[in-house]
Structures are given as C-alpha cells and as structure tokens.
Amino acid sequence: MIKVGLISLGCPKNQVDSEIMLGFLSNDKNFTEVDDLELADVIVINTCGFIQDAKEESIETILEAGQYKSVGNCKALIVTGCLTQRYREEILENMPEVDAILGTGNFDKIIPTIKKVLKGQRVSNIGNPTFNYNDVPRKIRTSHFAYVKIAEGCDNRCTYCSIPYIRGKLTSRPIEDIYNEVVKLGQQGIKEIILVAQDTTQYGKDIYGKSMLLPLLKELVEIDSIKWIRLLYCYPERITDELLFFIAENNKICNYLDLPIQHSSNKIRRLMNRKGSREELINLIKRVRELVPDIVIRTSLIVGFPGETDEDFNDLFNFVKEIKFDRLGVFKYSREENTPAASFPGQISEKIKDERYNKIMEVQQKISRNKNQERIGEKVKVLIDELTDEMAIGRTQYDAPEIDNQVYVSCNGKISEGDMILCRVTEAYEYDLLGECIYEFA
Image (tube, rainbow, N blue to C red; front, side):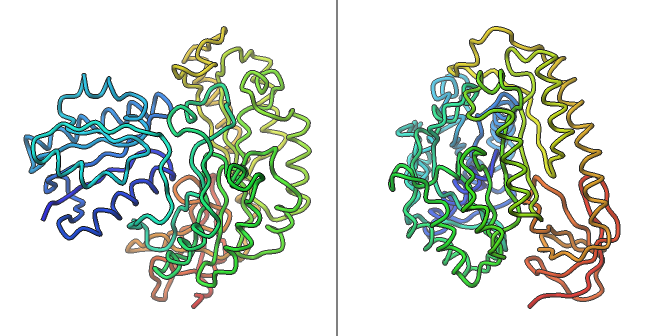
C-alpha cells in the first residue's frame, strides 16, 4: 500500500482539483491517503501561481516537503497545479527535490506519474492547461459543503491577470454533468454547494452560445438533498434582473453575491480592461439591493495598480465608504510577467501599496462591525462547520467558507458538523457573530 500525502494550496478551484486527484487515488486499492507527511511515501503539492505571494507560499511549501525525503518516508515529491503550468523549466532546473510535475490539465495522470517516479524516472507532464472535469472521480475533504467547478479558464483578458495563460480559455461543463455531480454530492451528505469558475456568469457561453448560469441554477434547485447553493466569482456587468429575481424567489439560492469589481476609478478600470463605469457599478449595486433586499454583497479590490494616482485611490476609498460592501477583500497589485499590465508605466512602490491596503481595510472594518451589530437579536440559520469543547462554529447563508464571517454558537443540546440550526445573534464584532441555539433542524 502506497501512502500519499496531499497539500492543496490556493483557491477553492484548486481544492476541487486536489479532490479529483484524491478521487483517482482512492479508486485504486494500491494507494491510501495519510495526513501525517512523515508517514507518506509520496507527497503531492497542488500549487497556486496566480500572484507573487501565492508563488512564494508554493515554493516554500515545496522546499519544506522536500525535507521529508531525509527525515520521513518520502520517496517521491510531485508538484502539480498553476505554478508548474507556468514555471515548468524553472522548477525542473532549480528544484532537484521535485521528482515530477503535472500541469493544470493533467490531474488524471497522477497514478501513472507516481508509478513512474517510484521506478526512478523524473516526470514532466505539462499539456493543454484546461482539464476535462466531466465524469471524473472525486474524494470530498469536507463533510457537508463542497465546491463545484462549473467551468475552467477565462476569456475576459483583464490586463493584470495571468489566469488565461495558466488555465486557458473558457471551457464549460455540460449542465447534465454538473447536475449528476451535485446529485452524487447530495447522496454523500453534502448540504451546501458553492459554484466556482473564473467567471461563473460566463458559464455555458462556449458550448451553448450564451450564458447558461440561470438554467443551470433552475436544474440544481430541484435536488432535494441540497439546502444551500452559493455563487462565487460573478462578473458584475453580466448580472441580470432575471438572475436576481430567481435568487430572491428561491430559498435554496443563498442571498449572497460575490462581485469582484477590482476598482472604481474609470481610468484604472479602462487600464485593467474591466467593462462598465463607476456609475454603472453604483447603479448595478443599487439594483441588486432593490431586487434582493436581504442580499449580502462581497467584492474584491486591487490597490496599487500601475498608474493609480492619489486621486484614483481616493475615488476607490470614497466608493467603499459610499457603497458599504458587506464583505470585502483587498489585494495589492502583483506584477505578473507576460501580462499587459506588467509593462505599464507608473508602477507603484510596495510601501504605497501597503498604505493603501491598510487604509481600505481600516474603513471596511468599521463598515463590517456596524453591519454585524445590526444583526443582534436576529434569528438566523447557521450551518455548523466545526465543534470545540465549548461551542459550535458555523456560518449563515451570508458567508462563504474560509473567507467570510463565522458564528460562534453556545449550545446545550447535541450538535454535529453539518447540522443546520436556528440561532439568535447575541453579540457582534468586525468579522464574527456570537449566538445561542434556539432550534435544530432535522
């Protein structure tokens, strides 16, 4: 029995890829997964290579894992994912501890790759960047929620983004394949599915000739075992009234939209090749809140983009104060080779990026605290993610796993991970709520 330890870095889309590799391994009786890397015969690292911080984390993780060749049982170190797709030659040349690399389109080759490496071969398998997700095995690492990748790749061509070079062009999965996967997930006890892609609102355009996100949702809400359906990575300018009406009318669709706007300055948006103006963004957000009154909007911003003047940043700062996003993440611009923005004039110093990042996060903390305090006394459904000796920790429909708020619940009764309870909010802080359980759903 070959023991395999797998480390998954980066975004939820990467987690899906890791779970697919685990699915192939779990279907072969010669392999078993272990959590303790010291016990692993083979270590697989699924890397992220999107921005500089992610690349540095991936490299550090590879070097740390390489040490298990001398202090543990490790006989093979295999690196997969975005970093390998992007830096194949550099990894092979500068990291002798790496025995094999697989690109983003080759996760199904994990077993033959392991076998070759254990026979003494060094393997490099970097092909088409887009993986075919149709009808592949998958071993879910979470007990009650799962990410479902509905498409791979992106055609938007934002000037700062390396994803089209790493993951290729938009490649959607057929509706029936996604539906069948979600049915299986429900049969495994999954209650919440989170739809992910580089741009979920573009889903289906390549195979159906138009966006098919709404028809997909109409199919998925009919699956009885699934209680929550959450949307991530929605391109703002492709949000339609029809989609918003459906969210408002259907209890299974979380009142939650992830709308990465990146910037509000019209000048910076043009440089980023983002569609829509500042004014159109404001009108869209007003429309979203009008049609779905209880909705929570998450966004992502980039500060320090080339050419961002004090005036441009103040535009963004004031935009955040005016809109009062419910959830917000900020990235400092990362200068990525082979992207158009890497050669733009007016590159911003790291010091100024840090200052602008801190200023946005400081005002957002106040906004988040005020919004959370408005929920004190409310009764909310909470999906329990984990248990401690003292309390249960979960999320409302307004919060995605790992990136959003948590609810810390004091409970007298017996509660398990994956349970859905009704909770009364008793206290609120910048990013978390405290509450008490008043009812447990079957």
